Image (tube, rainbow, N blue to C red; front, side):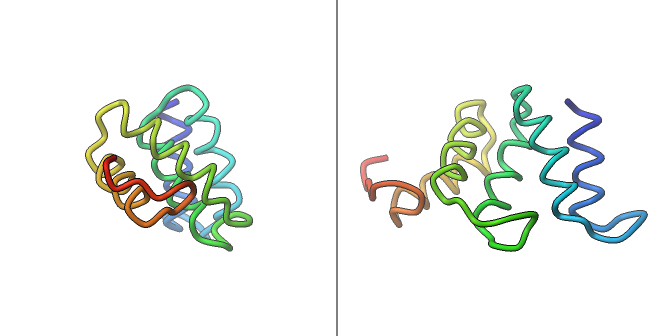
Length: 96
């Protein structure tokens, strides 16, 4: 999972070659499916932005960010709170 995450991030950032969001999303998705918290978070962020490897999907983004947050990833916890506050990807919930 770690190697898939690392390679996915290289594609996302365009390090060592052209930026390729579609390949980044594919590789990060493989790592995320294995429970890699940073990959889950990065895919969640990419899913919020149309054009970063495919169409936007805010509901799926919220689910992935939530998985990363449950593993203790601070960035994911912060963004999940913002998603709940704004109703992004699901119902607005100020108590979460």
